[in-house]
Structure formats: C-alpha cells, structure tokens
Length: 246
Length: 72
Image (cartoon, rainbow over all chains, first blue to last red; front, side, top):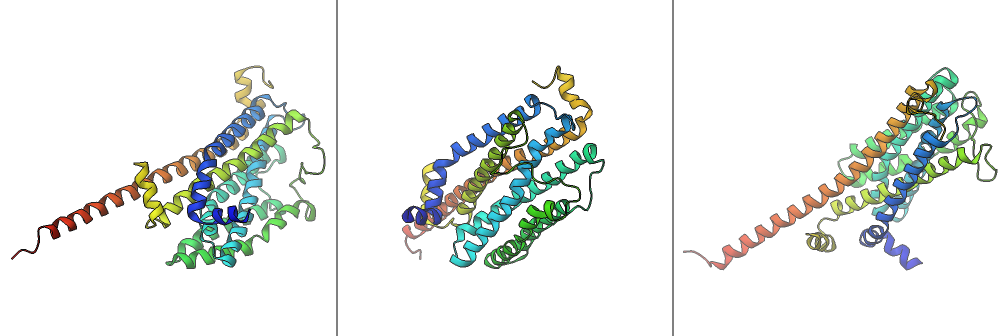
C-alpha cells in the first residue's frame, strides 16, 4: 500500500499508473454524461410545478458539486505541496483550476436562466448565489496569482496559500441555504435520506453527477500527464518515452 | 418519453431559451475542456519530439566536425 502510494507520488510512477486507467475513465465519463443527459432531457417526466425548466437541474447540480469539490481538491493539493513538497500535487492543482472556474460559471449561469421562469429574476444577492460568485472570483484569483510570479515555485506557493485560505468559503456555500434562507432552496438530496423525487427523476441526476466527477478526474489526469512531460522534459525516462512512441 | 413530438421537445413547453442555453453552456464547457486537454497533450509530445530531434542533429554535427580532425 505504502509502496503503491509512494510510486503514485512520483511523476514517473504517476505517469505509468494513470496511463493505464485513463482510457476506461474517459469511457465511463462520456457514457454516464450521455446517458444522464439524454435521460434527463428526453425521458424524465416534466415537473408538475416547474414544467420543463426543471431539466436544468441535470446540468446545474453536477456543475455546482464540481465547482466546490474542485476547490477542495485544489486546497488539499496545496496543503500536500506546502507540507511535503510534492511537486505532483502542485501540477494537479494548477491543471484543475480552469475547469473549476468553468464549472462555477456554468453553475451560476444555469442557475440564472432557471431563475428567470421560476423565481422571476435571474439574480438576487442571496447568500448561496453571492458565495458562489465569490467562489468564481477565488478561482480567478488563484489562476491569476500563479501567473503573476516570475518564479514557478513562488507562484505555486502563493496559489496554494490562497486555495487553502479560500476553502473557508466552501462550508459557507454549503450552509448558506440554512443560515440565511432567502431565495435558494436547501439541498434536494442527502446521502442519509431517500430523495423526495421519483426514481426516473433522480437516477439521471445521479448518472450526471458521477459522469461529471469521472470527467473531472479524466481531464485532470490527462492534463497533469502533459504537465509532467513539460516540466520533466530533461529527465531520461521522459526522453525514452518520447523515443519509443515515434 | 416525456414529449409527443420533436417540436414539443424543442420548445420545452415554452422554456426553450432557458433549458437550451443552460445545456448549451454546459456542453460548450465539457467539449471545450475535453478538446483542449487532448490538443495540449499532442502539442507537448510534438514539441518534445521536435526538440529531441534538433538536439540529436546538433550532437551529430558536433561529432562530425571533430571527426575531421583539426584543420591547419
């Protein structure tokens, strides 16, 4: 177990292990998103109050989950990088930030266009909406801060630090709907309770959520592998790898 | 199936602009990010292979010039 983790922590070991899993991971991501998307758009019954605009939850909820999960992953990677000086953690953190920002934007945008027919407004300074907007700014801050440093190590430390501090915003997002219940409804799903929705409505959502997580993993692994080749381009094993692929 | 016809599906019971723009933005993000990851991977590999070829040519050229021996 420790030997495996140790191997996974080195760029060379990570490159080999992730390469074996990636094709299956991409396949699972595409399949789950296609199944969930078609199911949610075409086959799930319309909501008796919201009609067809409710179908937006099949993209809104997974995007909002990922927006928060990616930030937590980035903060954990930042901690691992700062404490144990594992470069690989920093590479992964750098590669996942743009996807996290994109997911936050999609969560905000899909929420806004759902709000127009449902709430009669696309925006309110509601606690949930505001804390998600702050999350988007935090992502942009982390990406910009990394780019603002001439030295790679300086940028990596600053970005890690901002991610570790900014992660405070995640529990605020989570509990905002309970602490300041103004507009956004509380969570529709929890792990401990049976969903208050028929199965043909929540099963496609489950498929989308799992598919989005698989997509995030696949993108992050693929991009981290590219980053390894970029940063370790003078290493012998990287050179041997490029030789044999020709 | 929740719709009677293709046009009913496309109009989403009057909610077409909302539903389709949300799905459109999501699809654009997923396809864009996926395509970018793939393009990045190809670019990195191509650049590295090109750099190694150039270095090998330079090494060979250096070898060849020393093989000729010192010129008077």
